[in-house]
Image (tube, rainbow, N blue to C red; front, side, top):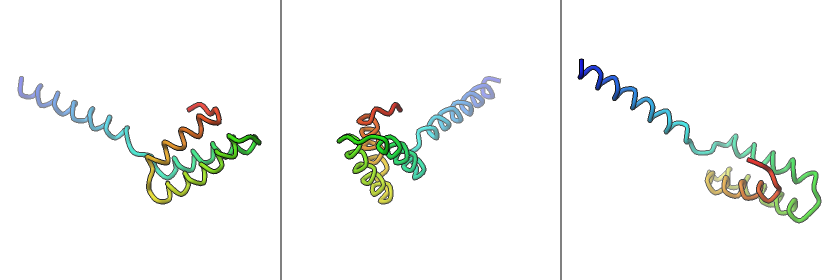
Length: 88
C-alpha cells in the first residue's frame, strides 16, 4: 500500500511539474504580431517623438522576430510599450 501511494504521489508530482514547465514557453511569431499591432495602434494616434521612436522599434521588432530572436524582440517590445504607456 505504501509503494502504491508513493508511486501515485510521484506520478502526480511529475504531471504537476511538467504542466508548469509547459506554461513558461518562449514567445511565438503570433506574439510578435500582437506586439507590433499594439505598438502601431497606439503610435498611429500620436504625433510626438515617442510615437516616432515606437514606429522605428516596431520595424526592428519585426526584423528580430523574422530572424528568430524572440527574447530580444520581446524585451524591446516591452520597453516600447512602456514608453507609449501601454499597460501589459
